[in-house]
Length: 409
Image (tube, rainbow, N blue to C red; front, top):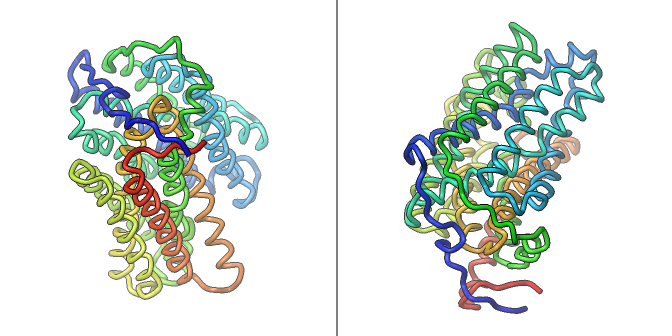
């Protein structure tokens, strides 16, 4: 183990002024995360129409979701490393064009296999887009308001589940899934034009290199923060993946009420993101620990409320609220510890989020396959939250013992 001086966030993310005001720039970035989030979540609501159009079973159509998630995991580090010498504004523009291209390609592809390739391409810029948007947001505010800025921008993801995904389902049901993706591509291009006008033009680091970005990730605090994300977010997906089945088969609500529960879920995500951001500006560690502990408690309650519509509605709000409160804390913590790997670390946080998605969904599938019942989803999810809590506590303990940032050899 070696130790390096503590890098100051101010040196890694210098304060910059937006050309047409900070409010306009932050609103544009929030709109961008909303558009990209809609592009990710849209297919879950329009999967039946998507499957019918391509002559697939619902299960086989789900491979398009897997292809996108794989693109996110691969693309975040790959694109960030290849774009190490570009400015953040330049990289944002390239990523938005790739996002638009992927969605248009998805529309044009005639066979299921080619559509899956197109969805993989569309997922490539996802993590880097979110990560860089958070960094740009933080660069426009003083250090004590970073959590607020990051939370505001990332709240676009929650808004996409609340508004974007249901709108895409409506568009797909009435005009076809290709039209839904066309609308998303158009909104993506509007975001591209907005970046040109509203996002400050930072200076590119032409001396930077991919190797420098990668070696800066030797910081153990960065790795433990990413591991917290990869595990701690997983419990939410153990429940969310099978929530519709729980509502229909266990709680036995009418199918039209399922959408109401999805809106409640999205509202929980939005409230959690904003409350988490507020708490981050007061105490990052407290924000993360409360989010993980609170999510574990909410998930433990899940089996007890399965047969109660009011009880389940409350839990469906609390689970994503607590889990999503974790996002601003981890994103902001990475800014403090990443040093020269700011962009890569911020992007990898969203790769970790997608790993958590796969981990949670797989754990849920395993529990159901072994006949533990839908109530086990809450207990399994709680275990992931507790595991994430323990990893985060380890990071805090190592930091306090070392007195500074600990770098792994």
